[in-house]
View 1 (tube, rainbow, N blue to C red):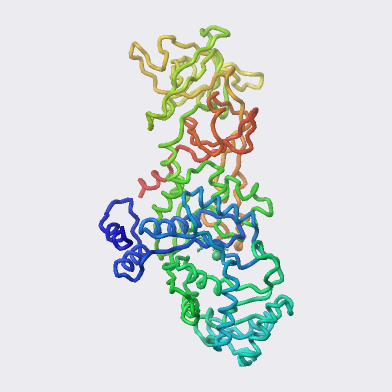
View 2 (view 1 turned 120 degrees about the vertical axis):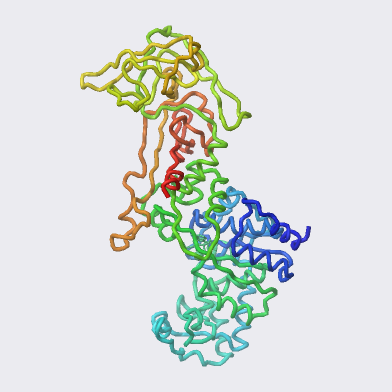
Length: 570
Ligand code: ATP
Ligand code: MG
């Protein structure tokens, strides 16, 4: 199928799952009109930090558009600032994009692959009178630049000869000058209403070793000079970026027009993702990590892809999230509750059900024979019959959730209380006979009896119970640590108050460690990174900190759907 056919086909497909937005409309019409033969996009991270969920929006858009319209998307590292970039970040970014479910195939590129070509084009601009070497200091340059309301002034070096600029630029490259001594600037218009056109810097001196090119260069292109030209070299047709680059587009176009580039990419801007109760600026995420406010880039409270993965969020939940928030030009704030709803929806389909008690209260079944146990059959996933069943051991001493018992229960409390009967999931009906207390008056144990005729959790005489509790056999349970997470920040938009100090809004209760939890034996085999449902509690995922002796689980997300609740209130 040709790209145009794919476009027509997509246009006819009115299925709810096919995203429609202004960017896809542009691509569709470019293909239909023959302006574009094959759509080529790119995801262009700067390797100076880990990817976050905002990047996931951009990845899903760039790779998604290429996939839907039969083109290709490349992964391009925008590695033009060697002082902030590290191999660690490069590796993490590749891992995260793959984990999210996208494949760049043979299209792995680096802006640094083009350093020689970019340099040659810089010389071309000098030779055609469209760039010059400026000797102003950074402070002077700022003063000459003007403001939003005042035009800038020409640098005294703007009128130096082509020959002199070319000579100085070559000597910059040869390493004759220290950092910051000179820059190469485009010669555009110091009076432009758009500050980006007031002779922007194209090359700066940086005596720094680069992760890929080593010490071959001591001058590096700026983002603005590298980005569009890299797009052109790679044949990118639709260069998709966030709105803060809208004011850079005239410069992007100016460079493409004034250079002998092989293709003419077009830049389109969309609104970046803002997510409530977190921060998505790399500068802030780096600060959280380096100052130890979190345990690292992959701390499960972080909005990074590594953190979300460690927390147990499946990649399909993030792709679904990206689809639901859509693409537009309007800035907005997306509620974290929407992301949580996407997690629940994905996990409800895929997660195995297991039993775990987070806050244990001992139960002794007085009429169950001492020293005996039996295996009961339990369903692995009611949403997926193919997931089958498993055996859960039952015995005389069990643990239930402490909050599933009340000494003096109110009317609507359908769980256990003195004299009350409830169902133990997959097991038996039990009745509470007595609550045993310690000297401090705290309940330490429940004495109960069970009805052997209710094996499997059904009563042959049609007797009904209102409550069903989860439980773990004391002798068979695996002691574990469970990490319960709340939002990393207490405020929807951290830093709105406190004079902009977003750190003041860090949630002191974002991590609660429960260290005497008990898991059913089948949880010993739960693979790290795959979330399971703890019945009645939520979704949890084994953490890499687990040892064979002591599993550690992260709470991925609770069961309660705050999003659905919010929606129904509207
Ligand atoms: P910073 O946080 O310093 O602004 P950055 O997040 O823009 O950095 P890049 O590595 O340059 O870091 O981003 C790569 C791509 O991801 C860019 O095309 C950028 O527009 C896009 N992107 C970054 N943040 C978001 C976001 N919150 N929502 C959507 N796209 C984003
Ligand atoms: Mg950026």
